[in-house]
Length: 62
Image (tube, rainbow, N blue to C red):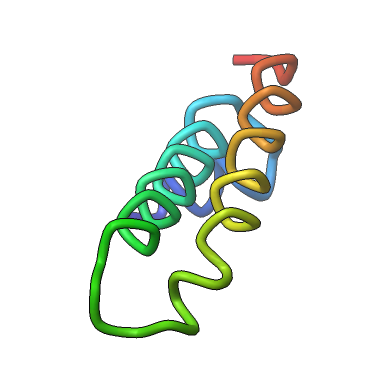
């Protein structure tokens, strides 16, 4: 856990890519769930933020 946090603080690719991937997965889950309309409403923006974040983070140093 401390490696993950230190990777985020030092702008290393691995930790930020994992965070972006988790955001994409959460956005897709929000899109597919049938229970909460508010989650469905924000699912596209969460997926979009995760995708743009992944594109930006892919240029960070390892």
